[in-house]
Length: 586
Image 1: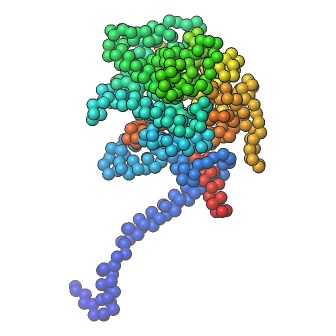
Image 2: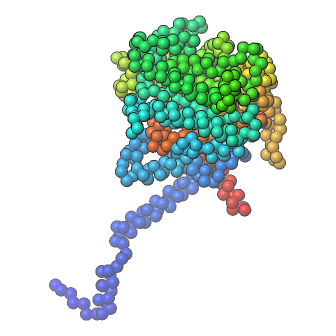
Image 3: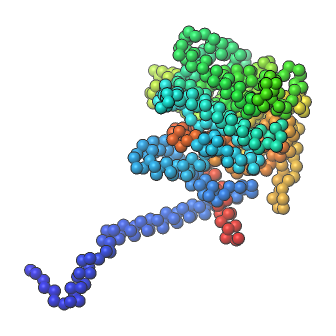
């Protein structure tokens, strides 16, 4: 039945309803849900922020900007969610591989995680950061944060047919030049204060990292037993590299392995020679235990070659840097260059410590070279335990990386994992090593005199406030530092005054973007003529660095320890609140 509308007003009403732009009821309900969800989320985030602010006092010495603090709060807020951290590698792989989404994901990652933890895309691009750190009395340890993937990058080349690992060598040499150029332009006199160094990772410097594993197997099987014994991964011997004099396969080493290992040694010599000429220290990073025997062998061979001490009773001086020029006469006197030049990393979570450190001190003393020590706890504990358990299980091949799910990388012959059984055991080992090293520094200064060439250098890598305080207490106890009251107004602290000869032998270090409150505290607490606090600054393009960081997201959770990310988040929140109140008050 047709309905005839006679009323003009009614016709206008119906026409208006027919052409109305109001959303249908379903969309209106969805809009209300979104508004309520947003309000609820904002309330929850606001409450979480309030809780974070209420649970911690802001640090006195923190110079981060408000935008830096907001970024840190967002990043560590996500890092506080353990399932998200565990799933991060998979999530990033999916996002970066999805067309249309990858650009958004890249922009987000660059604005957050990349800017938080990576110095720049290139070494030269990080120079403004180095300058900023130096104005805050901090040094930098450069690291090209790109590795050759053990499965995917074997024989990989770029469009110019240059092997990936050779490009890594060039990047490392470029970072040495950037470090030296920065120091040359910063220092008013070249005798003190060179605090921009370079770190290298050996797995990134080979076409196939399996060669390092095979070399480690060879060393584990052929090194002479010691008394008392040193647990796996053992401790180096002066004869470790003798097998590289041959060109034929032997034991676990193939001809290809020997060729690649010889090339690696030559590249390391090239890097260290250039670093010596430019006055830049080189740090060899530690890695998983299945690489460590080989890394130790190369590290100690390089220290024996480049850290050689003068034979005339340590009378040449470390502060004579005339040899850092390009003159032929300067190049002829290697003993006048920076000492120690080469540092090797020691991981306190390995059960071989501190016996390995004791043997290294004896080896350096007998060989007449300075021992360079970078002391850390270690970041691969869960993987070491899992790999060892898998290797010990029935029928599991050992020492092959072909399938991380079915085969184990572990090459340890011991029934127990190579790592300490607990965090407390690792901490105690770290403290034992600290005591041993500070004793060695004290003896070295006594033996060589105030201006003698250092026979030891120690880089204390730690994110623990307790460990830093323990180190400072030990320095004061040994007469290597003196406590003084410094500060202004109501903010006064007990600072530790470090003499120049001690400052040449020690440094504290934390990763860039992490434990900034501790770093800033140490800068105020330790008084010396040169920076004694160093930030480990990785660099590399986003595409190169993110796979490296995502693959190790789970591994590096242990760097901050239990609740570390939450503590970083709360510290950022407290400082954000403090700055907001200052802005309102202004």
